[in-house]
Amino acid sequence: MVQLWLWIGVFSMTLGTIFFGIGAHNGKNQQWKILYTLNFFICLIAAGLYLGMALGQGVNIINGRQTYWLRFFTWFCSTPLLILDLTFLGRTNLLTTSSLLGANAYMIITGFAATISPRPISYIWYVVSCGAYVAIMYLLLKPYREEAASKHPRSKSAFSKLVTVHLILWTLYPIVWVLSPEGFSILNQGGEAMGYTLLDIASKVGFGFLSLNTLSTIEKARELAPDRQMSYQ
Image (tube, rainbow, N blue to C red; front, side, top):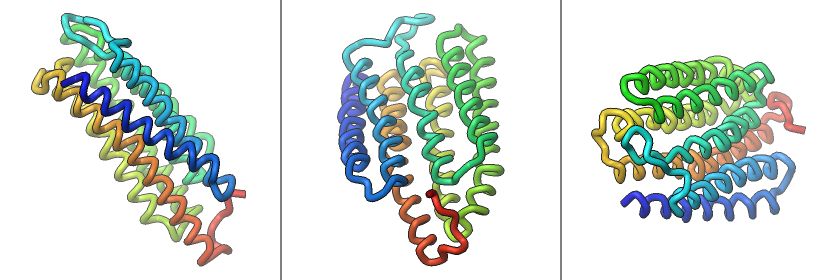
């Protein structure tokens, strides 16, 4: 069951890599090429590391449990690019962008510490990691969304959707963790693999499509009111 979901991850991320790679090559302007390229590397990183897990790499018995620690390396490499997706679209200032990247790195590192630590220490690290995620939520809901709305006033609903979908997907990750064998063991390893794989597909391939749709909305709004929309040039 675990292997099946890992190979589904390989296949899905590879399809996403091909799609976004073609888009990066054929993008109609620099902005589209940048966004396609970000999504291309997000899927490429995930495809490669899912392949490693499917081939039995990046997994060890830790605290008596089979642990795919390579997942955290995948997330550490790909999630910063997801954040850059958001900040590129919102034309976010450097302070907010760097704060998001820093909080994200801290969240993943402490989440990894929770996964490899014995109970009850693992729960302490889990709470710390969730605290970093709360900081990310605040940054996206407050300064990020406010700045995006001020720079793209006719696209506020698009950014609300973008942030909402992003936060829903990312909130489900710690829920899967706490239900998995690393947490309260409500899910078996097959259920854990299914949960993480589906979330990865949605938050990488699916979110990539949503980011493209958001850029399309921004461009349409700028065409309707060019004097009120800031250019990417």
